[in-house]
Structure formats: structure tokens, C-alpha cells
Length: 350
Length: 286
Image (tube, rainbow over all chains, first blue to last red; front, top):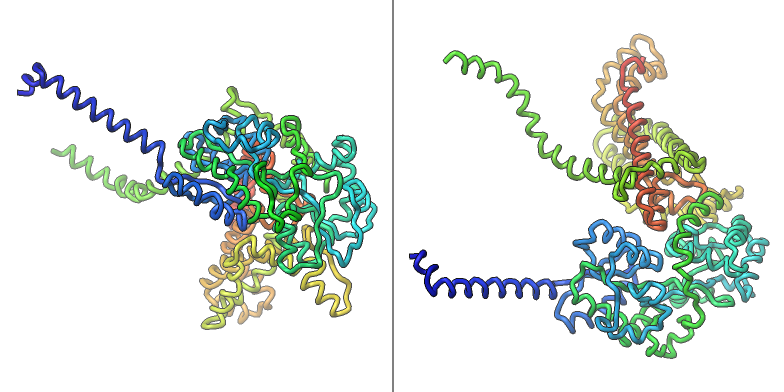
């Protein structure tokens, strides 16, 4: 009987039926691939993660109906997770530091961002994505400045050079904490010190060595640094603006924060889409860079954001460092030097 | 008919020997997948096999640079010092744990084990609060009219914090051996006129040697593998290999160099463990 069916018109019907079934199956598979049950995004801990859940996740879930899992941690940990399994990455959208974003792009782990997939990219100035060849976009930046104890230090120097020389001369005693070269943004800060002395890295190391006798600790985590300042172990701390204002606003009126002249480096967090992530993840990147998302993020974490259509409300205007006061280091030039600087730091800053 | 019978009889002891080994199969499989496999990947990464022919450049970098040789030496010395302090402090505590019973014993064990119940980061911040210049210890020194001491961000501070958390491993390892010791052996030695010191030297210590070696292996390996405490309570000069590996992975993102340092640390630990196991031999205990 089967032989008859195959030989006759039935064979055509069977072929059409099978073809339709395969096509429906394939279409279903494609839909399932483009619209997963959830996507996994990253966030730094504390108020940063709170902001992600408040300002970006609802926007994405409302637009797509897809759930978001927020994975808290640190830049290098996330990068290592994706590098270990690039074909089936456990993370869909990354929020890496500058150098890690460059590493991820060079390793072919990220998709290039264009206005076709992320329309809000048009509102982000070029200097916040072109240095990374559009594989990652700065979503917010912290500005490294000085938090000090107003009771112990009455008139801190107005510019970085005077400040560094005053510390090296022992003006504040051994009551200073400074970011270590081995901190995630440490190499960038070594570069910034070098810029104060004509860009010479040897001078930067010489100055840092001169400061060393008066440094209680070259800190490697922001929490550790805040602990030193909060317990009055140090009176002068090189620190991030958002975290400093958050500390001062919690009733610590004895502390103050300022950015010395001529501005400072931006410690940036860049949003990027992992290559193996489903296309729907682009919508999350779009939410992160949107006007409302960016404004809400700035209001929550008190860090600068990059969408040029956003105007900071009066309540946070004095606390968020304006984009024209920060410098984005030339990562294409310093990236390959970072391992050497870290090795030099370990050997010389004993 | 005779042939199969003889085979069955001769294979019976072999079967009896093989059966227990069969029970080890899941463990062996687990170790192959989750220990030997990653170790092999680590070795391949350190030799840069993904780039083609193997290269020993990373190992040459480690062993050709006096800085890295110094860090290896520091790591070993640090492990030995922490272990030695744990032995000195842990042995009397272990004797107390072994000799006590009832509530006193339970409370003492709880007091010894309690540092392990606290998260490593919280514990390290706790030590910062105690040992810093403005901390509790120096407050006490000032109250007593004594000069303050600066132990934070020094080897002393890091050593104190690690001894605090590793002491339970030493105490429990020695105490478990001492508990099995027949008290009549010590009594017999005392009756025969041996002093307390001589009883300890010739009876208690040799019979608790297994626990001492087990505790030492645990303390040593955990010390030279620790990095969170060293990172938070130490500074650039208190560098040990795990911290360097962490830096290479997180800041430099240099996986091959980190892998080579990891393999070097593994070989060193294995060599030291082998030496420690040699101490179990009776000739060392005479």
C-alpha cells in the first residue's frame, strides 16, 4: 500500500506535508532563537545593580516581553566567562571597563553596534564609542577626583601637579590613599599622572614612588578605599565622584569632594552585545542608551552619562561631572602597554 | 568441564580485588572531567598551543626574572611561617579539645571553628578595623600609655589574619589523633619516672604525628593558595603567587602567563607535599 502511495499522487502530498512540517519547525526554531525566555545582562554591585533593575530592565521587558536576569560582578570576571565559552556565552549583554571592552572586541567576542540595531546610538557623541570601533559604547563614566577630610585639610591644592608634589613633600603626612596600578582603572590613572608631566611615563612612576612613603595604601577596591577614609585612617583619598557624593550625602558632612584642574580621566563602563547573544539583546542596549534610561541612571548612581539629549536636573547637576571635564584615555595607544605598566608597578612600588 | 571450573576458581580473587575498584569509577570519572581536564587545558594555555608549536616563553619569563623568583620564595616562606605558628598555637589547643568533654569541649570546638563561619571579605575588613592605626588594638595601646604599632599592610598583619582562619584546621587535625591516644600509655611513662616534658617528647608527640602532618598539609596548601586576605591586608611588597595570578587574569588579561604561574605553583605545592609526606616515615619520628 505504501508503495502505491509513493508511486502515485500521494507521494507529492507526502512531500508537501513533510516540507511544510520542516518549514514550520524551522520557523519555530528561528522564532525561538530570536526571542528567548530571558537574556542575561551584567551589573556592578550595590546601587549600580539597583539602577539597572530600575532604569533599564523594565524598559526592555515592556518592549519585548522577555525577562532579564541581572548578573552582578566585576568586568574581568564577566570577560573571562565569555572568553571561556564564546559560542554559548552565559552572558548576552556586557558592561565592561574600557580595556576589557577593547580586549573583547579584539578577540571577536562582540557584535558591532550600528544605528540600525540601536537607534539611540545617534545621541551618543563619537568619542564615547569610536575609540572602541563601535563594538562598545560608554553608558556612564565616573570621574576620578579628591575626597578629603575638611577638618584635617583646609585648603587642598587646586590642580593635580600641586597636589602630587604636596603629597610627595609630606604635607599631609601618611594619611593619603591612592588607586593602585593593579586596580581595574589603575593603568589609566598612571597614564593620567604622566599627562600632568608632559606624558612621560617614567616621570609618572618617579612621582608615584616619591608619594609612596605617605600613602597608607594603594587601594585595589573602592570599598577598601572608602573603609580607609570612613575610619579616618586617611584624610585625602583619590576616588570616584559618584561614590564620594553618595558617601557625603549619607550624613558625612565632614568630607568634601572636588576635581582638580585640568579635569580628570573618565573611568567608563561600556555596554556591548556578545556575538552569540540573540538579536533581541540589541533592544536592551537601546534601552540603556535611551534618554529616560540614561537620565534615571544618572539620578540613581550620580555618575555622568553619555546621551547628549539628557539635561541633568538641578538636584544632581553639581554632583555629576560634566562630559567636557573628563578625558577618555587613548586606549588604542596605551592598551598594549598596560601589562608592562602592571609588571613595573609590582617591581617598583615596594 | 574441568577447564571452566578452574578458570572460575582462579578468577574469583581477581574479581574480589576488582569489585572495590569499580566503586571508584564515578570518582575517577569526576576527577578526569573536573580536575585532569581543566589542568590539561591550563597546561596547553601556558604553552600557547592554540598559536601552533608549544613555547616555553612564559616559563622562561617566570624563572628568568629575579622578581618572580623572589615572589616564589616569599610564597613558600609565607606558607611555612603560617603553618609553624599554627602548630605552636594549635597544639596546646588541640590537647585541651582532646582532654575536655561535655559542654566545655563543645564550646571550645565552636570557638576554634567560628572564624570559618565568617565570609573571607568580612573577616578581612574586621581585621582592618582591629589592626589599623586608628583601630581597636592601637586604641588599647594608647589607653595603656604604650606606643602604637603599625602592622596593617605588612607581613605581620597578613600572617595574623591567616593564622586566625587556618588555626581550626590544625587544631581539629591534631585533636582527632590525640583523642584516639590511649591515656594509659602516658600514665605508664609517668609511673616509670618520666617527666611531663619527656612523656610529651617520647609518647604524645610521636603518636600524634599523623594529625600534625595532616594539619600542616592543610594549613600550608591553604596559605599559599589564598589571595583575598593578602590583597586586602597586604600591599605591593607582600606579594605572593596567587595574587600575581589573579592580577594577570583580571587586570593584564594575560591568560598564558597566568596559566604558567598556576602550573608553577602546582608543581611547587606537589613537591612540598611530597616532602611533608616523607616525614610520615617512621625514621623521622625517632
